[in-house]
Amino acid sequence: MKKITILFISLMMLTACQASKITTGALDVKDAWARPALSGDNGAVYFVIENGTAQADVLLSARTDIASAVELHLSQMDGDHMSMHQQEEILLPAGEAVEFSPGGLHVMLVGLTRKLTVSETFEITLGFKQAGEKIVTVTVRDDVNDD
Amino acid sequence: MDRKTLFIGLGSFLFLLVVGIAVLIFAQPARFRGTTFAEPYPVASEVDLTRSDGSRFRLSEMRGDVVLLFFGYTSCPDVCPTTMAELRKALSELSEQDAERVTVVFVTVDPERDTPERVQAYVDQFNPAFIGLSGTKADLEKIWTEYGVFREIVNGQSAAGYVVNHTARVSLIDQQGNLRVSFSFDTPVEDIVHDLKLVLKS
Image (cartoon, rainbow over the protein chains, first blue to last red):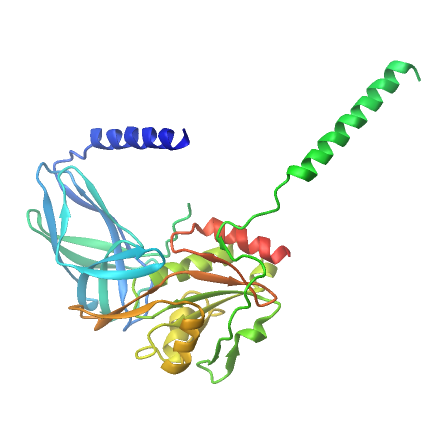
């Protein structure tokens, strides 16, 4: 019975999500942040991409001045085994939000050329197939999911 | 005192007695929220490595303290820093007195790149009281095996050289040096705090 209730609620939520498609007419990158890291180490940038346009888009690239390379990665947990997979591109369906978050999709900053300190900001440039290039301001913060 | 008062008094007494016994019978002992080890608790295998300052770290000398043990590597941009940030957060939710009785230990799965200095500098960013350890591959391999740590080097196209896929579970070792509970990557900080408080009370 409990399972059926959960299934029912999930279906309701799914329907609700589909009903509330993002229709801003623009592609927005929101709430970009990175964890503090040492110079020379690697870092990760997280954000939410809201594709409010009527057509699917693709995130193709990312670059920044503060790292020697920037890559798109996906962390995956298979039981307790964490693995990272480099992504060529990331699909952004029309009307949907794609979340980059700890333990999932992230922009990997390889070889930071400087230290990242809490509350400072830096810029990264994201390249989209349709939306072109977007400069995103990233805030360094110490975020822990508290739920 | 009339009969009525006596009956009410006696009735109340019996009622409370029954409720009290029911509570004793049905009350569940406080339970861990992480994944528990069954009794008899396994003794945590020795971790004996040289620290960045040249001193020796021996897990067996940590008796009396609670140890949170994690295996990771400093080039790891996502899961390892997230885990360290969560453990720092968990410790900050304890009283100062309790937090002093918990030691976070980070052992590398990447000795080819991680020197003891590098691992210590890495954990220092989160909390200078955290202990970061590396060693020879032979010494570490023994520890990984004993703790059932999966570790796989993957050479890809990444500019990071290679990535190390590894077990991302935090083990809690109690004051007697026994493995008591472990936490998967997605464990809420609140649950780690709950279990730390429970083990610190015992």
